[in-house]
Image 1 (tube, rainbow, N blue to C red):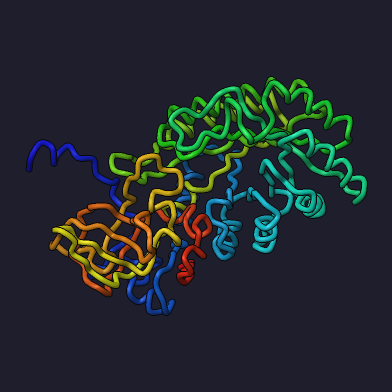
Image 2: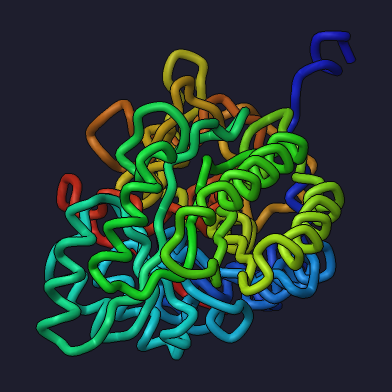
Length: 414
């Protein structure tokens, strides 16, 4: 093997799913049998036991006093949300529609919070009626909630989403620091807190979310420490003691070649230290971390069937029945600046020694419909099943399924 070949970055091993007789197992079910049971491809499949395992790993690594919330925007499939509601301490929603799913799933309304920069009046009424915690992101929302509270005879429970004066370094998406549509700038928060007090809303605390998809523990530790320090300063202007402090999330999973899994140990140690400090400085506050992708991303796969093999000027294309309309992020069109391949395999040929370099493309009439670009995979034929790993978050619901009129795909929790 050449030095260049040895130094080429590879995907982190996708070992969370077992393999039997050369076939991937999802929830203990062989992939081909699962496809037959569903009656069609393409589909997303989510493994209950992997969801359980991830929550268990987090519980073991983080301080016991810390509450764990699921940010359901990562994956709002009702059956999955119902399962997660039984594993975590709370659910974070980003719309009135998500709120309905969370409550239908059995989530405790006292442990549901609502964030988003453009909450509509009808959504705010839903939230007040349900008795959930509303993360205020503008002065307008204070005025709206004061009116709604008076009309309904029920005081809105609120926290302030703070746009901090720092960013989460090395994050995939920066959601705090600088000019942002999210939250209220930290320097404006004291004025907002005074307005909340004058309006008679039930203030409970703060929500800080500096960024997402981060694989560097030291960056997450720094952001959480700064978030806590900022919350302590802002608490001095609060109309009542802080009872709720959401330190955000940002925990990433490895998608691309060269990326490695996040080390939870230093994050857990730092959160334990923050919890000890909070017991002294914010004694009434419950600490929360809000995670979406990290909880569900690695527990899901996208499965699509090869319908054709095409050879074009020396390069082989596997044409599948699914594509970017089902899995926009795997195609590179959901935030990637330079397109990179997700981990991909031929799910019914996991033990095959016959390999080839191919591109996996979908059925859409656009060159953007690319699921794997020049990847080495097991040799495949029409009828074989292509699996895209790391697909449990921002897949089905984040994709333009009506694009070009192709059929929608299914979701299953196994």
